[in-house]
Length: 173
Image (cartoon, rainbow, N blue to C red; front, side, top):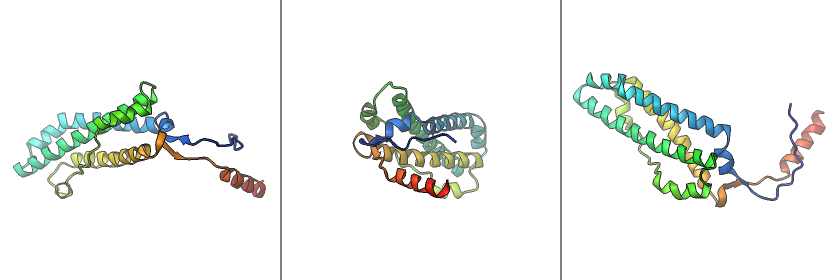
């Protein structure tokens, strides 16, 4: 087990935003988002197009509506992810990213639940809509966390964890 230095005194807040966008968690989120975009594009241009032709008129309209919403949502998420990857790559600062965010609007356009409950919509489209909604919810949460406070400060380290670790070590060792 790796040794962790718990003796460092924390005198300054830890800027969460810059550290997060440089983390493996963010890289996984970025890859997941881009893969979903590619997967959706392939579906809508291929099998989805064929499935849409076979739908009844009303269902075809619902398919068109939801696929446009899905495409819009994915492009919003791609913009957000690319903006934060630019921060991680050092191309822009977090402060610059904040000013650019006014151009990246994460709109709350949830899929129409009534349409999704209709068994006539292709299951693959419904699955892509659900996955995009889950990813969007995660990104919206991260956006909220990144937007809180000055310089993205969301937590400050204290000595409380050190005290607890020492107490546990004395009992267990």
